[in-house]
Length: 211
Image 1 (cartoon, one colour):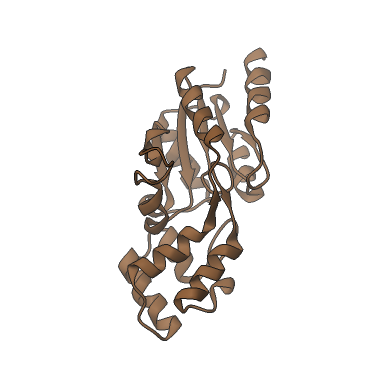
Image 2 (cartoon, helix red, strand yellow):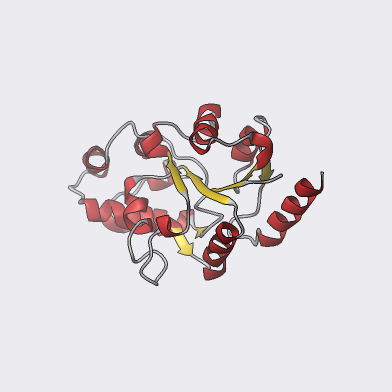
């Protein structure tokens, strides 16, 4: 019986565009973003930020050094938030529907303070609600000090939810992340970036609940 549904953010709730983020960082004066940014996991100071090893201000200072010019926190936010290109209202409506049906709905995301500055604001959905309006719990890599696909982050999420793996579905567009979750016995779905996962999820819930 499925009781818990856990979502990735970028690529699942909203579509991501790494190239737009790269262009934005280039606009503010950092011209090597392509060496650090990825669709699924970041490296260097970008990964340090998302794993909580450095703060937003430390990231700004280190990025300024790499860029050879002083960058602001607003410059950093502008670059990072370039990842988000499309947030379908139907996805947000589905989250609300799932909660109304009695499922526990959580987020498990590799993310950072600059993305959350937007996602947790009233500007997130265009209707005055932040991300936390749609979820029962948020598990954010930079706050947890660990990133997917590390096994421990999934264990921490399950512990926080007091959830059993076989009663949990995890939806993520990264094969590394879904493989890590599946290794713990969690049911997984891996839609394409920005793909329609609604039917896939309902089919999985039906199959699991018939067993």
